[in-house]
Amino acid sequence: GGCDEATWLRGLARPCGPDAAPEAMEGTCCAFRTPLPAPRVATAAELNVPNASSRKAVAVTPLWGFRHDAAADAVLGLGFYPSVAQYQYYVGSLRKAGFRGDVVLAVGHELKPRVAAYLRAQRALCYPFRATCGRGSARRRRLLVTPGGCRLADWYVDGDARGPRPLALARYEMYETWLREYLPTSYALILDTRDTFFQSDPFAFPELARRRAEAGHDRDLHVFEEHGHKTIGNCKYNRGWLRCFPGHWSSEMRAPVRCSGSTLGGRNAMLAYVDALLAASDRYMCHKRGIPSDQGYHNFLILSG
Image (cartoon, rainbow, N blue to C red; front, side, top):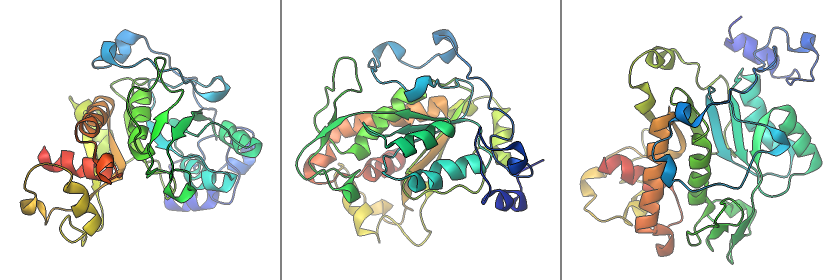
């Protein structure tokens, strides 16, 4: 049946994975109640990636021989953590909520054996990568900020031509890589992984199901506001991040803050968004002015149209 709240709650304390006993998953929302479909392999013509010929060749591939399902929806994120528990909050809750699409993660260059076993069992597409980071970038609590800046040492075939930048920005290059793997009919959700927990399949809401049947849905982009009391004007952080950009922003001080840690859209819309954010970061290089956050770019793009 469907995944209502009672069914979801029932499954939280039960195992959920391809090796779990079927009777343990019965009556839950677990994505593995029936085997996941074999990944759909699409041709370049079917993928029809915008500006495909100008995109950089990528050297990295998922672990364990996993492949993207070109027809699936995908949840994308950067997260390399030392314990299984930290992945259970994000990956595990997503699978227990019934999501059967692709879970794609950049996981650093080395996974502990128990972590690797868990992510493999959850069929997460994990991309190992190495980053060379400047001084002041090693503290885990500042993982995305990386004030010394980082280069992606092994992501691209021809090397990393961009200068050092925070991983908060470099992760958008990872999103761009992954979005190329999906058909225009797919949707993607990019999220911060550290503080996300799922209570339902994020693509299962009725409005999205209706929109999929309509023309042009691949161009839909959904951004999400933070708490209603927080505005650009009364948040010193978001107000400060916007000062990196030219123009007079006083007219936007009452605008709500849009969170860069959660963005949803059709494949084409998400590629256009990621391309625009990377182009803005290349142009303005706010990190060289002491502003390492991606959220300034995110709100700048929304407010400037």
